[in-house]
Structure formats: structure tokens, C-alpha cells
Length: 215
Image (cartoon, rainbow, N blue to C red; front, top):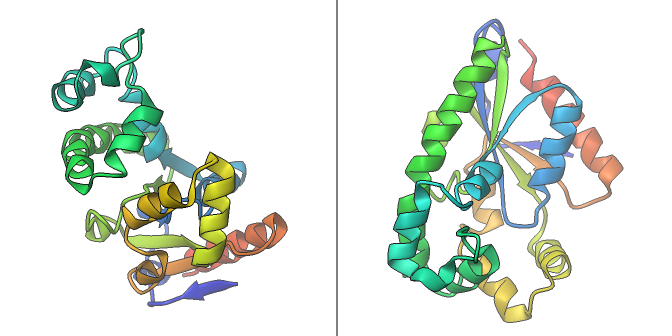
């Protein structure tokens, strides 16, 4: 089921205009599955997570800053950030998570703008930015419309625990680092329910695209 919380003005736009749509969710709600299907449908999608991961590789401008805060032991022998080790640290310390965000967010934003310009130059009229912390960073005003991938908290916890092989405490800390998924429902223009099967999810995404392209 596609839940529409607010009337998104995209429906009344001339679709010849460029549409910049923010796609978000909670950890383990299935946002990556939505992005994958959108790409299969030919929609241009920018992956903020992939950009973030690229910035943790050796030679990235983020490396010296991260090293200065977290120490040299946060790096692998190859000079990249040890992502599991960094995750264990920041998800148990809101202060360090905030410091990491202050390093990463401007760099991710710059790379995202570069990707957006490339896709615009290629003629894409609809570009979706897959961004995990859209509401946490209060970025909704940057987009023509926002979309939330939703599942109930029980399902979210189960998926996260099984996917990442985490303890209950680790699951709790990671979910607590984000705005709760239920709170995000009221902030989004559209909500795609991913509480069911993959087939049901694909149907919900198709419904979303049909409504998005109405005019």
C-alpha cells in the first residue's frame, strides 16, 4: 500500500521540469531494495551511502580528518577507514557520531551535487537521491518531494539483527541513532510500505511512480 500523507505539488507541475526527489527510510527498512527496483525501471538514482563509503577509502579527503578524531587505529593497513570498527564506536557515542557527520556531510553533499549535475546534463527529468539521514539533517526543503520507505519497528529490528548479525544492544543503538521510523511518517510526502514481500514492495513502488508522474 502506498500511503500519501501530504499532497505533493509535483502532481501539478509540468513534468518537463527537473524533479529532485529525496528517498529515505530507517536502517534496515529496505531503502536499498527500493533504489534497486527504481534503477531497474530506468529511474536515475544517486546513492548517498555509496558516496559515503567511497569517502572512507584510502586517499579520500575525509581520511585525515577522521584519523585526527578517532586515531590511527581506525585505519586499515591499506589506509582506508575500518568501517566495522568505526561503526562500533560512533553508534555507541552520539557525540562522536555527530563529529563524524560534521566531516562527512559536506563532502557527501558536494559529490551528490556533482552527480546530480551529470544526470541533469544527460537529460534525466526525474532524479532521486537515496539519502539515509534526510530528516535527521532537516534537508527536506532541498527537495521537490520526499519519500519514506517504511516498515514497522518489530520488522525493522528483526531485519537489522539478521542482516548485520548484531546483538540486541547493537540493534538498539543503531536504531536509536536515527529519528524513529514512525516519527518520519508525518514528515514525508509519500510513504512506501515495505512490511511485506518483495512482490508487494514492487507493486507499491509502481503505485508511487504512477502517482508521482500524474499531472
